[in-house]
Length: 114
Length: 112
Image (cartoon, rainbow over all chains, first blue to last red; front, side, top):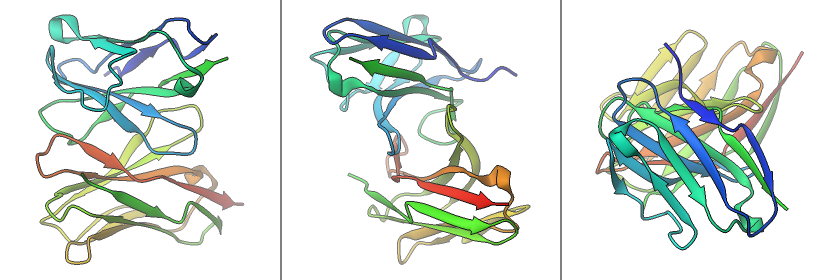
């Protein structure tokens, strides 16, 4: 069974540029999460989807971050414009049911904003 | 909200020795506690988890203990091997069951 797929794996951009990350969860997993992981820290939740509905986006900086999960399968996270402080690893995870139990993580996208 | 603290931040052991990582949480209603292993350049991988109705769980060389009264849980790795070297994260699920809060991580180094 394929795991969570993310692309790109690495991205280097200049500040004020837009950037987008893509995630394809494990087949059949209804819940999808986007996390941000700063260097030397644990993942922090940005947004959680139940199917196509964003049910928890309280930690998403809505002035520059947006996300969508059309058709309740794959998802895109966008930053526009990017700032220096956005440099981090962006992790996508999925789980088969509601809630936070047994989340499976993708390899992440490492973003560097110059 | 939930707050999870993890100690130590770094741990170095000799191959074959045991390693213990400890976490405390603040929300007494949290009921699910997973542990993740993250290798360089990869996403976190679940290695073991425990629910609040269980005090201890073991899987080969890995065990987790939970003390609900004290609100702390620990990861125990016995007979450590160089391939155990990684960053380990503990997490707690909140009462509503919809969010994991992670600790700050422990970098484990197993010296051959």
